[in-house]
Image 1: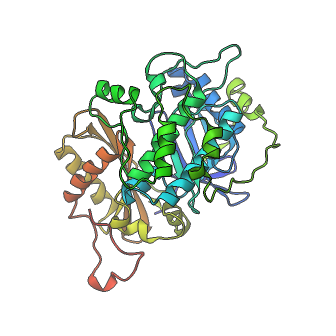
Image 2: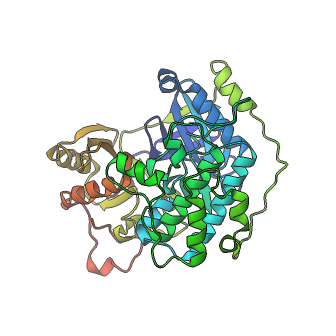
Image 3: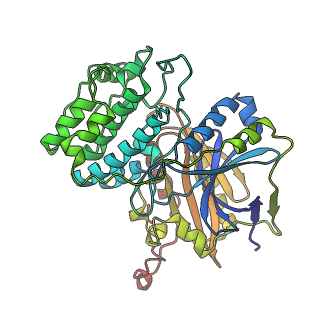
Length: 446
């Protein structure tokens, strides 16, 4: 069984690590430097069909402008004949959302450190005239050292000449400032500060300050800033959160005030970075303005059909840091939107079993090249979800099935996954008792 190799310019492209409505994110390696990167792949036809050229161009331009140690770095943009490739920093520590779901509330000193890094990143964005407008734990990544990285600038706004206030209602309702919900003009900086306050509350409490099943009730509570802090919040934390979650944007504390707050300043060590770095947007203009004349070489080599073979280096990139136990230990990985199990059944048997189980659950099934996409309705009937399962060969007669959420709510995905796994017991491999001491071979139980 041959390994499938695909290259885009100087990058060797590997497995898919994320999937959204309009783009896929793949792991890739710079063959010149050996550096690992994340490659965001967008189809030109999709961008044109949905008239997203200006939005994508804006997102890429913003990420090049806001270079900061606590913001995911954009390296370059490439264009193929049919696709656009955005080369980003590869962040291995997962989402802050996952950490909260896994651990519950974080210790106050840990929450403060993340909050300090968040405020530094947001302050840098604002200094460049950029407002994120969709700050939430799912858009905050962690690197292998536990440092926070702001990502996903798809809803960000740049200032327009002669326009002082923003008017587009966007973002995730639970994290959105009341003035944004009111369809009035709003200050992007004040709105971002509100979202930062909600994030701080969530990290310290383990749950949302505003959380209702119906939107009218949720909006009412947000507009009135109707919330209470749990008893374990320190006086300093409570005081700062109440200053941030002020429903009046004119009296709400600003970033300068947050940075002067005694609770915030405890053990505060702002990160050093170069302010004088020159930003060049020529490659962005070339990709979008002269797309047909300049494009990077796209190559794909495959000698035999079969699941991708995953080498040790690729396996390491699946885990946080260099701890490989999370790859095959279901207990360590149960909170993520990406989960895995191991099987000793032939790859074709794995796929056929997955298809049969999915059909028994009334899910739509689409399979191609040992990759299956399942689509269905969430358990609370609030919307659709989609899941992608891909089979990898990690050793002769040993396969890993990588399962990830492609669309829908993350917690809803885990309800599905737990139910789905109970129906796959006949293909999930469990090691013999004598092998349980090996952290690499511990199987994932559902």
